[in-house]
Image 1 (cartoon, rainbow, N blue to C red):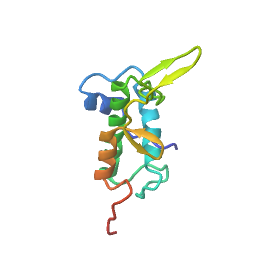
Image 2 (cartoon, helix red, strand yellow):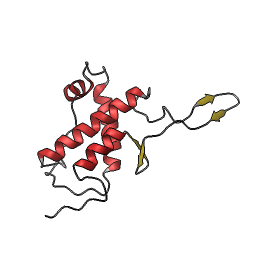
Image 3 (tube, rainbow, N blue to C red):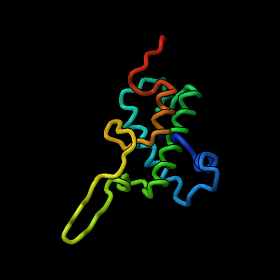
Image 4 (spheres, rainbow, N blue to C red):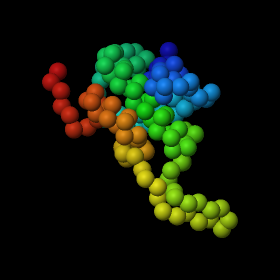
Length: 132
């Protein structure tokens, strides 16, 4: 069986405080990939499908994924990560001007600040040691 998404369209709607976009499943899947990239060094217990066992870890991953989608929607991004990278773009002949503000750069991912905080609070980002 495949790993479950970190968040559902219903969780996204609750996070946003409004109905989830029609393509919520796609947006959540893309945001989940961003979260996975930010977690490359994280250590937490998983089941045979790779789903986290700890309910606090599951909640943090859900929050981080919803925060990532919220950030991308606010930036006008459709989940590709391309929005907000430039202040001005022209095509023909090509002209790119000034980089826009970027969120936390984690593992090469334009990670939403709220997503990064959710992961950090759960101890899923580098720099925190927990006794086992």
